[in-house]
Image (cartoon, rainbow over all chains, first blue to last red; front, side, top):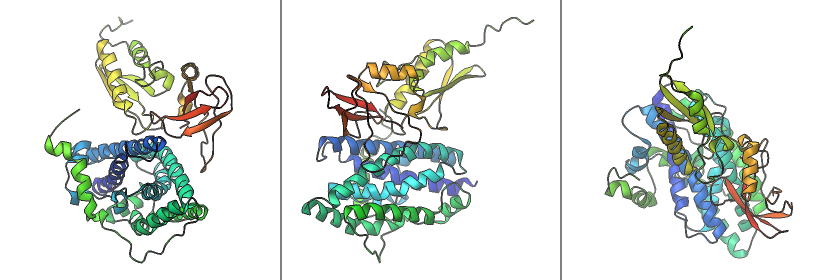
Length: 251
Length: 166
C-alpha cells in the first residue's frame, strides 16, 4: 500500500481525535456536576490516547524525524485536517453532548470496520478504540434523550444545538482522494455505509429524545482541506502554548 | 555435548521479574494478574517484553512500560519494551488471582466481557465487594481511572469501584 495516502488519512483521523479531546478537556473543573467532571476528561483521555497511537503510526509511515508531538503541537492551522464539527466550541453542556454523540456514533461503526480491515496497525488501534467509543455513544446518547425529552429549558438548548451543529455532520462522511485510496485498499470502510448506520442510529435516539433531524441545504465543510473556523486559532493557541513558548519542553 | 552458555541471559528469570512488576494504580496487582504482559522473549542478547495497553489513553501505560524496563535493567538485563495492540487486551485476561485481589481491596472485579454490548440506559448488576449484596446502583459510569466506574451498595451503604468489563 502506498504510504502517502495512508499517512494523510491517518493524520485526518488523528486530528479529529486530538481536537475533540482538547475541546472536551476544556470542561475539566467546569462541568455542571461531579460525575460529568469525571466523564468528560475520561472521554478526552480516550480520544487523546487514540490520537497518540495514530500520530505514532503517522510518524512511522512518514519515516522522517517527526514524532507524535511534532504532529500534535508543531503544525500550523492550515496543516490540521480535522473535520469542522470537532473544533466547534463547547458552548453549553447540551451542545457538547450532541457534538460528542454525532462524532462517537460516526466512529463506532468506523472503528468496527477498520478492526477487520487490511492494515495491521490500524486494526490494533481500532480494536481498542471501538470498545472505548461504545462508552462515549452510550454516555452522550443518554444525555441527548434526558435533555431533549427533559424540561422546557433543556429541550430548547438541545434543539438549538441540533440546529447549530447538524450542518457540520456531512463533512465526517466526505472522502478525498487519499481516503478513497485507503477505502479501495480495504484499510478504512466506505463512507456511504458508515453514513447509513449513522443516520439510522441518530434517528432512533432523536425519536426517543423528541428531536427532529433538520434539513441542511448548506453543509459546512473545509476542515479536511485545512480551512478552519475562526474558533480554531484560539484552540490551537492554547493547545500549542507550551511547545511554542518553551520549544522542546519535556515532562 | 556442549557446555551451557553462561553469557546467555536467563529468560525465565526475566519473565519472572517482568511478571511481578506492580501496576502503578492498583499496586496490589502485578502485571501478570492484570494480563497485560503478553510475552517476554529473547532477541539476540536483548530481553523484549510486550505489554498491552488497557485503554488507549491510560496514563499509567508509560509508567508501566518504564517500570518493566527499569526492573529488567536493574537485574542486569539489556531490555526493550514493545507495545502490543493485537489482539486487544480485555478484562477477561485478568487472572483468577487478579479477581481475588481486586475484591479483597474493595473493587468489584469485572464480569465477563465477552459479548459485552450495552444499550442506552442498560444497568449492569454488580455485586458489592464488601457485603456481597446484589442490591447496588451505579453512581457514575466514569471513575478515578479509565478502567473503573462508581457504584454504591444499597445494603451496606458503602460506595465502591467497579472494574469495568472491557
